[in-house]
Image (cartoon, rainbow, N blue to C red):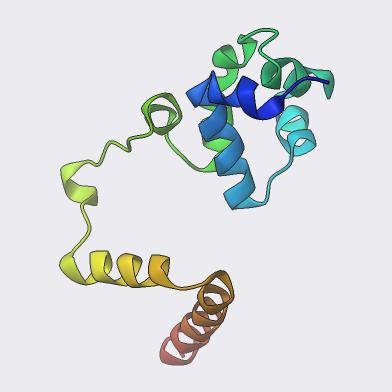
Length: 119
């Protein structure tokens, strides 16, 4: 039996694709369907039977809501006008320090707050 973890460890770009998919709740079928590919394509990528996914990298990044640069290097390029304020940075740091269930509760409250204040 092939070892998926080893295959992914050998390919950091594919590892970032898979971890981003996991974070976003996206599965292999979602991605391959978006790209117009058969289900076997992802299996080949995972087992290092080809890096043909690189030709789809921009479309994969767009579908996952991340930049191509992030998938390639793990770093997001931040434009000057997109930099976060200190309050936004603090909010993100605090959010990331919460447990998953606490994050979900926080988001529900924040969305509820924004709905009330927007009326």
